[in-house]
Image (cartoon, rainbow, N blue to C red; front, side, top):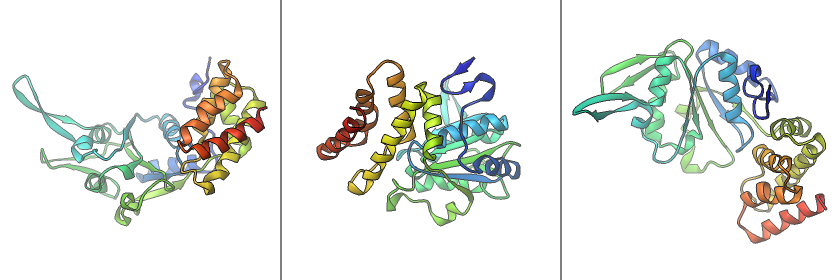
Length: 267
């Protein structure tokens, strides 16, 4: 049986490599090295981590980082249950104990004092001190820390400190080459190859508008969303406007230019 999202059931989450990123992460996992994924929004970072967790046979614990994420959210906290105080592990602590892969998505969104708790896990010690309980948890075999962020979106006040950056092996990901991206769009959305190629061509042309004020360019994720609408019976122009153009901007001028491009490509 084939699932449009994952491919054959035995193949795990579908991911099409664009370089040697699979081999690099495999060696990092074997050597206990933390990994940093850098790339634009929607280029496949999260799917890559899902694929690698399946490939390595490890559980995956994912945390979406945000401004209010505290160290306690990652490590754990005391809770009151049935008139007693009990400790509850956070997602990072669970991953350390279980030997899971812990994936921190968009890590630059987290506060700096939160990121500091990662440091003892990213060097030879591979430990997680829990100040609230006095416990020091040694990383179980198979544990790996993976973080990701979008360099083009980060702001000066939300960059990683050099002391944090240099604790990770960095892998740069980008949108695939057109032929590969079309294969991904066709596989993930279920549209025919010709439509997938046209959607990728549209994406490429829209990405050239970055110099005209477009803050975020269309991701592979958006092209797949448009493909899924087309596969469900929605007209290709309507699908592109709804799934690709409208999410990118609220600026009337930019929206008009992008919609004209859609009309020209899909008359």
